[in-house]
Image (cartoon, rainbow, N blue to C red; front, side):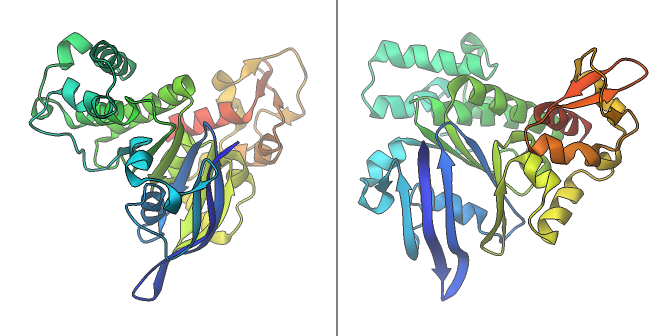
Length: 309
């Protein structure tokens, strides 16, 4: 089931299109990544979903209803939002920040308290330690974890994330990427995630939309983009994300694979790039190696790429 649909959407400023004739769908429970360089139109696209920006032409549908026909307050109450600039209210405790939307929706107090603690535990922040602290007492990574808690607290069907980790140090960023993947697997919330980093897109996305100069170049799974980039720009963008890794002999992926007694059709010194095609088609790849045979699937290869980067 599709939760979101862009139908020939264009956004112009002073006659110049920053998003041009965009059509795409996002499925229920999908972690969908919009990726592109600065000026590609990805953040404008994201902001049109919760009507922070209105399209010039075309229609956007949320659960089969046009956004323009949806009550704005109801729309924003049902879409969580996580910004790059960590936007916690500085005069409110961590718990109060997380509780804000449930309170506005008139949840019972006991239910709100329970939900605050559940969300803090879900992002590895002990409730008894963090619930009553103020935002300025937290690190940047901890503040962004609270921001994610707040976005998810009222159980919205969709959450928007606009480059939420780009201002963080590499260790915090990797930790929060892993946390988002874990939360997504657990909660099955539809997430639309914007990034300029192809590494991040390949690690997080169920599907990825590559944008350039306001135009959509390709929508595909990470495996499909790696195996069959639609344009030279997409190919170069992906290659820049994983330089030299595609020449890696596949025996180096053995620890990510599954041991098997089957004889494989690929030798252990086969470059990773050679097997991307079959993996993109959903097939397993069986590798014959001196140390023991093993099977690989697409998710295991992506796990290797994410770790190697």
